[in-house]
Image (cartoon, rainbow, N blue to C red; front, top):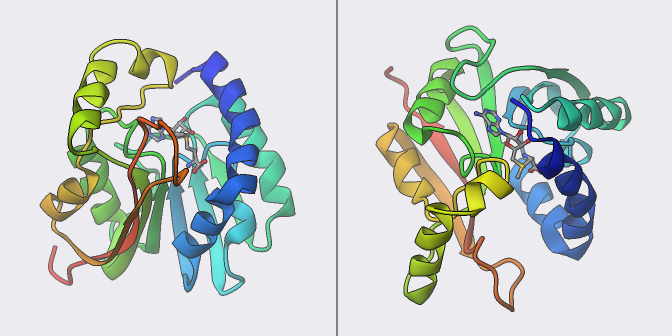
Length: 209
Ligand SMILES: C[S@@+](CC[C@H](N)C(=O)[O-])C[C@H]1O[C@@H](n2cnc3c(N)ncnc32)[C@H](O)[C@@H]1O
């Protein structure tokens, strides 16, 4: 999967977004995690610095080669062991019931099929394991029309396949996860931003498959 222009822009913009507040969202996203974690669509590795030391290791799956190379550079500096691998959300290179947590941040907007990606996350999680998510989602009101128009035209090709008008919390619930924490907020807090609102939270994979 190659998005060379988007990848280079994202790798420049992401640290700026982090400096303007997104780093705190990443810290909250990962707080309290322990054990074996899989991060899906790790991008240039923006989350790596925020993993708690109680995490045993992270397998960071990233399909875009430029972003993957940037992630490899971040992995070396991470406070926990991070292995960066090629792969996509619909086919994760892991055994079933094998990991304690799956992390998605700003990724479920870009996968071709959220139901397939979430079913794959469910498959690799051990019973009782956690999905941690930080995503921009569908807006209500007038902005919903703007998002739908952009999704049908220029936005996905310009933004590496990203879609603006997705009800990701509903997709997580439909994939048989139980959402236990859900914060919904605008980021940045003011100004015109079609990639808003954001949701940040935690969902549990049920004990039965
Ligand atoms: C907006 S970036 C977010 C990157 C990173 N997670 C972060 O929080 O900064 C979207 C990421 O999703 C990845 N992606 C797109 N489609 C994917 C797929 N089908 N499977 C896994 N990752 C995918 C892209 O390569 C990119 O790294």
